[in-house]
Length: 355
Image 1 (cartoon, rainbow, N blue to C red):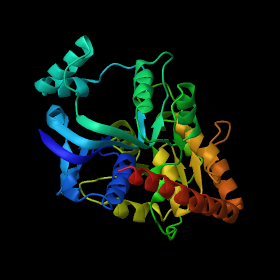
Image 2 (image 1 turned 60 degrees about the vertical axis):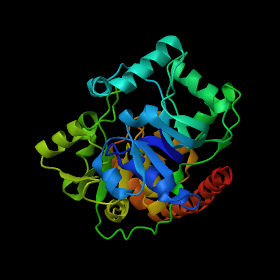
Image 3 (image 1 turned 30 degrees about the vertical axis):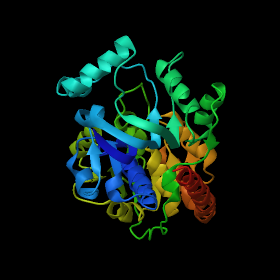
Image 4 (image 1 turned 90 degrees about the horizontal axis):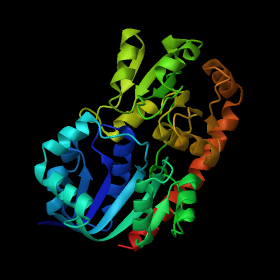
């Protein structure tokens, strides 16, 4: 049995900038309490996590039923949701190639007993997001039951808090932990526009590149960079076929700060990635949230200065709006940054006090 003082759980190491940025923040904060050797990271089997955190253990499926920790921390992000979809082919391959994990999981599911994936003394929830969920979702029911037993639950937005309140879970309302990061506003010296999009397989959506392209063409696309935060193969193929400008997160070749140094130079950002919105706030860049999922709507409601895209307008409309109100928007974003930076750090400090 491998034992650690702390295990951080999230969708880390899957080449997704938002999740990797969350890990970067929480890992750094935890070093005030633990040594690197005391911390393990529950993530994907990607080489770059091991190179980023060489003194800490990366826990993957084959390790789960032989891992023990004092404290399991759900470290930010939307970790609990239910679109009602079955397992993907990639997930099924993962089960087949990890027979010990699969056997123990089946015993737990069918018989309600057996080993837990990770043995722990307590679990904490740091600024996690919840939803969407199907009606009568078993996933929602199970996580809310676990939260009731936790010493510390903090949730990222009002929608997540509503789920907790319905189940009488005591939770602290907070903000995304990436807002605790100290960043200088970007130089904005390239005069360009960034459009952050993504592939989307969960539901029908009008906010994928295929549906948005006609409205995007009203911009001068020579002055636009399409930015990807994840693998997003369909999106990248679409962009390359049309010889559009592409800048992508590559954790094997760059650091979080390398990526942000480029991201911070844009004059205006449109984003269907939640953390595209969060880092626009931190960098003081006017941002239009494209509501491909509910958390983008929540960001526009709870982060003053963020504009919600409405489909009756095209992208040029929002560019003109941002240019006409630029200083006002930036000042609003920087005030939001100041307040949310303080709030996020207070939440993290409260969690650290529980360790």
